[in-house]
Image (cartoon, rainbow, N blue to C red; front, side, top):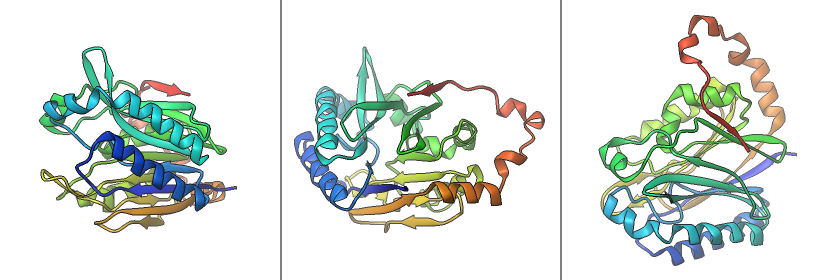
Length: 272
């Protein structure tokens, strides 16, 4: 049986965490009624994308409570859920995502490893796990965040460790549409896996987010949302499509790692 994805391209709004959780609950119920097994949300979906230290300090203190409520939403809707939030650990804060199962139990957690630009680096510490995976519906699911997917070595590391579906919540802003339009489908095709790239849409007064949420398959096929506006994109992840694509385009089998071993050295790995 395929795993049915629901990808929430959320419209940017200035609102508190309570209202964000309410919106998430509404979307989760819609996704569940449509038969989704997994709902994927954008980067820092529980708080909105705040990269400045001042805004981050304001929202991070209550983020753990919001995360607990998100797990409850997954359990009530009866679907797995990937959400993002600023995770405090001692004196530092990480740009984190968590994957919970349909009962609300945590199955995987990841901290963004590649931070984009000086503002984000001032707000967050970088995570130090390159490959984080979990099992879901007979598939091996991997987690990245936004800028991470722009590093082909990291996506290939996922492929070599058996990731079938790569979940990538994002806060991609203009003028970087080419990341969604070009790099994401290329990553899926060259590493022979599905990539669900889920972005914000609209403006928060600082940036205009690109939208363009998409699910790119290992066979080169792409299902996409528009560049603007809220949307709930559905796509099926199929084992037979993975198997057929890997047989037809055997990039992984035809590799010659002895020629580029310096690029394929072992990276930190977490299997939940």
